[in-house]
Length: 293
Image 1 (tube, rainbow, N blue to C red):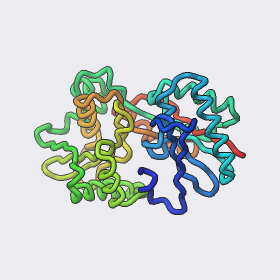
Image 2: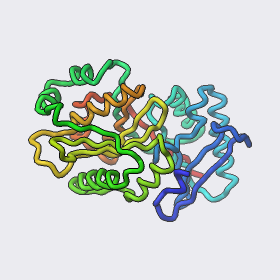
Image 3: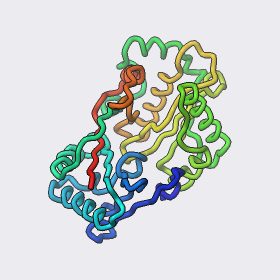
Image 4: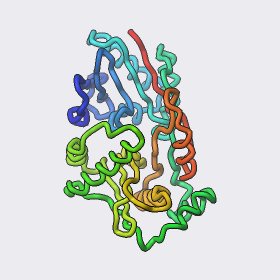
């Protein structure tokens, strides 16, 4: 379903049932474009189920080899690209990384990936107290009584569009823009009720920031896009926004608040890296592999 909603042009949906089985963990989905098959976290719901389900070396390698053989048999592909999630998504990630290289895949990209491990915090106040002095100074400028943090309901299309537009304006101010439309986002929320979440934060009754998040696993909330725009505040509201998201995650039993990539080998963004460190993120590596035929 996720791939069918994709707005990218000239893209073919791939679906294989490994081992001929109908069990969920045997299904693998991806996209084919220009004779290249893409799997992994190009969108967070694409993570192959066998990566999450299996930790046994032989089962993982057998799954990968079958995928390679099925791709070869299709005779439509010149390359397989697999973008692995970072280690905290599954105990099998590091094993699969080894297996990919063992079977001829090479690393084509390394990215610095950042997340907040929530297991060490009892509350958002504990989280705030753990931050650097510079971050706590910003937080002290915010009057908690002037804040409205909310999750936007999927039926509230007007608020969804307002949140989308705010984030898109933030992106445009940075020289880029959202890669999909607001109507796509609404369709996504309609089809994946519990997996797509939008949050907003108002200060003094004015919308100042928004976030589009995906529930990528039962214990992980991934911040796909977020930003602030159109306000005259003398401080960044994103520190308080991060704290409110932490509070939401703690109340709803998430173990990780995932902020994704800060930099990769083609795009070094030290300011973004530093900002995420300031809001308490840990940094790990995310690897992308490729195999040419």
